[in-house]
Image (tube, rainbow, N blue to C red):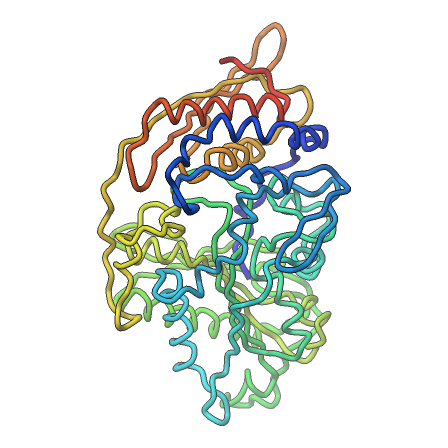
Length: 464
C-alpha cells in the first residue's frame, strides 16, 4: 500500500503525432548535446543519453524489449530509454547502498519482532518481483476507479495499454493475498512521471507491508473474545467500513499503529514524537499518514490503513480482516542520513558510496556532502498549444534530454495574452553536475536541444 495522492496531477499526455516524429528527431538532438558525455565511459550522473534514448517512444507498431520479454507498442506507450535504463538496477538489493541499509533495517525489525508458531519469521519478504505489471494489477485490483486521475498517461509509464511499470508496490498485493499469504513485505522500484526537483525522481523505491487476521487471531486473549465478530452489515462511516464491526476495526487500527510506531522507533530512535493524520486511499478505510517530528520539523513518512474488505474478499480471504502500509525508502534515507538530493542515490561516485559501507546496518551514518559544484541556470518560455498540454510531459522531456544534469525545473511565470487568449509558460531549469563544474557552453547545447525538442514534440510555440 502506498500514498497515491502524489500521482494525481497529470490529466493528458504527449500527442501521438509527436511520438511519430521522435524517430526523425532523436539523432539530431543527441548530436546537439553529445559533448556533455565526452570522456565518460559509463552512464554517470549528468552523462548524456545515447542515441537510443528516444527509441522507446516509437510509433505504435513497434516493440519494447524489457527483462527478456517483448511488449508491442500502441498509443499508450510513453517510455523513454532514460527510464528503461533504470529498470533492473535494483538499488534496494545492492549491498551497502543506503536504500539497501534502510530495507535491511526494516526486514531485521520484522524478523525479530514477529515470529510464527515454530519461531520462524511471520512476514514473508518479496524483493525481486518484476516491475512490469498489468494495468489490472496496478489499478483495478486495488479498487481504483476507471476514471481516477492516477491512471492518466501524464502520471505513469506505460509499455502499452495493458502493461506498465508499476506506480506502487501495491500492484502485487492482490496476487500475494490470492496465493494464500497473510503477512508479507514487498520491496521494489516504482515509476511515476512527476516534477523535477531534489525530492522527486521518475524512479524510486517503496516497501509495502500487509497483515491479515482471522477472528481467532484478532480476539485471542480478550475477555469474551469468542463472542466477538469480525463482520456485520451496517453503514460506512468515517471510522469504519460497512462490513466491519467496531470492535474489529478498533483492534486492527490499534495493531497497525502500534506496529508502525515500533518500526519508526527502531529506525529513528526512542523519544520520537509521532502524529497520525486522516487521509484517503482507494484501497484502505480508514486511512492515515504518519508524521514524525525529526529535528524540530514534522515530516510525513508513510501511508497506511485498514484494507478495503472488498479487495480482501476478491483475493479469496473472506474470513479475514487486515491492514496495509507503504513507505518510500528514499524518503526515509534522506531524512535519516541527511541526503539532500534524490539524484545521489543513482551516483556511482565512490565518495558517496563508501560512506555507507558499515559493519552494522544499524550504525548511525551522517552523510558528508560532496563538494557542491555551481549551478548553471537557463530559462525557457513558450506559448502553449491549443490542444491539451501537461507539465509532466515537459518535465519528462527535460529529464530525458538533460539527464541527471537537471537538478530542478520550476514554473516561474504564467501569462495569458489579453487579445489572443494564448497562454505562455516560463520555466527555470537548474543544471548542476554532481561531480564536476559545468560550463555555460556545454549547458547551452543541452538547453538548445530542450528548446528544439519542446517545439517538435509538444507542439508549443517558442519564445526564445
